[in-house]
Every structure is written in structure tokens, then in C-alpha cells.
Amino acid sequence: MTGVRCMLMRGGTSKGAYFLAGDLPADPAARDDLLLRIMGTPDPRQIDGLGGAQPVTSKVAIVSAAEDPGHDVDYLFLQLGVEEATVSDRQTCGNLLAGVGQFAVERGLVPAGDERTTVRVRLLNTGTIAVSTFATPGGEVDYRGDTAISGVPGTAAPVELDFTETEGSVCGSLLPTGHVRDDIGGIAVSCVDNGMPVVVARAEDFGITGYEPVEELAGTELAQRIDALRVEAGKLMGLGDVRGSSVPKTTLVAAPRDGGALCTRTFIPVKPHPSIGVLGGVSVVTAVLLDGAVGHELLETGAGPVEIEHPSGKLAVAIEFDGSRVRRSTVIRTARKLFDGTVFPRY
View 1 (spheres, rainbow, N blue to C red):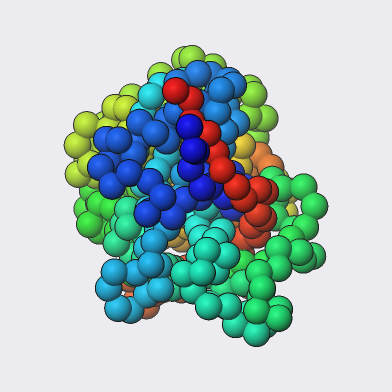
View 2: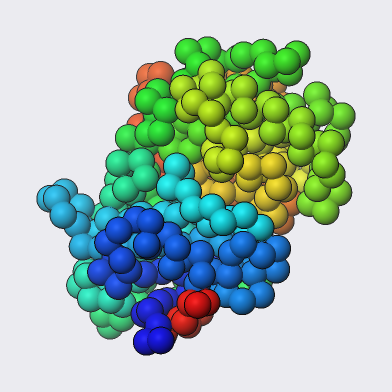
């Protein structure tokens, strides 16, 4: 009856409900039940909740002050189902991460700088640290700016996200199968984990071009083939039975055709993604930069970050290698506060 304090934010190309951990039940089962009722799941329209009827708008960020030294805040990401009453913590979300630092400042967890603020965030899902830097002129978060990102109308203030020590954060190694390239059911794949477990395959091996609009990729037959591939890949990657899980993600690649370095079509887990996730994009770029990996032969690179094309535009990712290891990954995102108030769950 009293509701729950909540901030709805767009982070990157996703949208989610942000909560302080102390405002939610400590028991995970009770917490998940509450969040499902807040989001309006299960329902394909999520008509009785905050959800926007697709995975990229059915997300939750739970933030708290850091319990250990070395970082400022802890961030737990939860992916809520749309049609099915599922809550998963098996992945993190780099898009919602783009709003975590600002939320921490707004809630008084971190003091704002005079011009810019840097927040060290521990991603509880993976145990890794990300550094978020954003504008705080006069000691207040300013979401206004002239940075545009594909998949989001208009412009906003830039958010620089730096990732370190992300390789193998979920599976234990950058190449969880032990190989740069594997064969699953006659399909060549590269399985990589640089913050997000992904399975990279060529679009043409699935009988598509890789340039199709999202709505043309929603067919049942393609979804079944992708699911079969990722279930087998999940076993090879040490993730066990991934049926019902949102990881690993599958990305189909093709040669670029719009000035980027590579064209991508991503599925979460079998539903076509309207763009591509931040850490998913980081892992895909990492994969195709490896000699012998699936998609490496399609890559067209030049100086600067690698721009990968997706259904909504492009995502630029910079990867720094130290020998065979990934030293650092950097992505520029934007975020915006949509509302701050009280949300009332379905009874």
C-alpha cells in the first residue's frame, strides 16, 4: 500500500527501474516476487507494471554503498522476463550501468565533484569493477548534453565506461571452450567471455544476410535454431544447462555495409535485440579481433575504436590488449533520469 521508492532511468539503449538495496526485501525470493509485480510480469504487454514489453525495458538495477574498500558502490543487475515470471542474475548489464553512478550521486551514496564525477562500481553479477565518469557541474548531475548514441533519439551528456579485468568474469576465461573456434552442429562459432558470455556465428550459416530488420528475425524456426546452438554452447562454456537463462547471448555477424567494422544481429536469448548490449558488444569486438575467430575475416578496421553496426545504428568499442590478455575496454554511453518517486506493485 505504501509503495517502493524507485527511479526509472534510461541507461544506454535500455530502460530499467533503479532501487537502493535497502528499499527492497533482503530475502531474494521475496525481492524477486516484488519486482515481478512491479514490472508487470508475466504478461506479454506488461500492462500492469513498469515494463515496456521487451527484454531491454524489463530490467532492474539494485545499488548500495560498497561493503569493501577499492570501489564506491555495489550494483546488482536483474533481468526480468516479460511473458514468463523469471528473474535472472546470471549476467550483468552495461547499458543500465551507464546510470548507476548518477543514481548513486542522486541518492547520496557518492559525493559529486564540481565538474565531473568518477564512480567505481563493483558489478556484483560478475565481481568485476567498472569506472563510470559523468558530468556534475556545480556538484549536481546534469543529464543534458550533445552526445548521440544509436538507438536513442536526441542527445544527452556522455558517460564514459571503463572496464578492466572483465575477461572470463562469468565463465572463468576469455575463451571458455579452450578454443578460438568451435563447431556446433556444423556451425562454426567463437565463444568468448569479456564481461558477457557470447556465441558468435556467421549470419549466412543460418540462412540470413545479417542485415534484416529486427521484425524479420522474430520467426520461430530461427529462434529454435539459435536456442539449440546456444544451449550446446552453454555446455561447452561451462555454464551448464542454459535453457531458461538469458546467457550466453548469440550474435550473428556479417560484413559491414554502413561504414562500420562489422555488422551484427544479437538475440537475448532468442528474441532479436533492437541494438546490442554494451558488454555483449565488448565481447563480440574482442572475439572478432582474435586471429582465427569467426567473423575475424569480415572485420574492416582502421584507427580508433571498432564500430560495430547493429539494427539501430553503431556502437564504438575500444579494446586494449596486453599480449594475449585484455587490458581495458571503453565504451561511451548516455543516460537520463525519467522519473523519481514511488512505484506501487500489483497485489
